[in-house]
Image 1 (cartoon, rainbow, N blue to C red):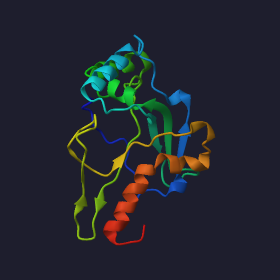
Image 2: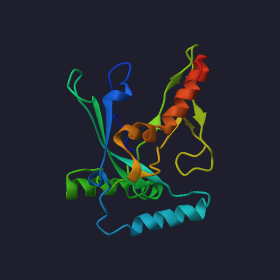
Image 3: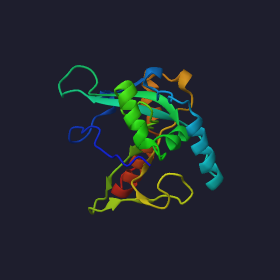
Image 4: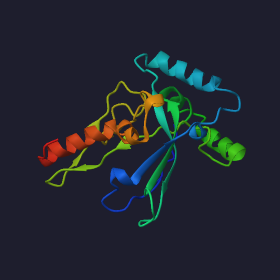
Length: 193
């Protein structure tokens, strides 16, 4: 498991409107192939399927980097550089026992400790109720990542039909989980969805 948790960026108070966020999707932002090939990823996946046969692979966006430009700069305030990855690759890199070695090898080979990791883009929301409580969920026991633990509403956006995506459609495709979190927030606040 990848134990490294850190703050990637800190947005201004109040967040950013979608007009100030841009996503750049490019194969240049995909995970680098492992030096020995992807046999280790396949082996981890097969082992996980033996223990949890309900798991399934699905495409994911890979977060290569996020760049926040200073307020007042022309153009978008936040640029998300995205590639493609999969749930199988996530379990076989970020959640593999070799995750620390993959970070070290990525730094050595590419000058980027994340080069060999899947790093799927995740969406999470901290929801506060009108009476100052926070909303949390308990994860299903039939998931590979943190089964049965308490979490915030969210998920991993899935690129359904990449060849037809337009820049203007990117935001909607990236945020289906965020839409659910906003719906839940509106319900808690008593606003219409």
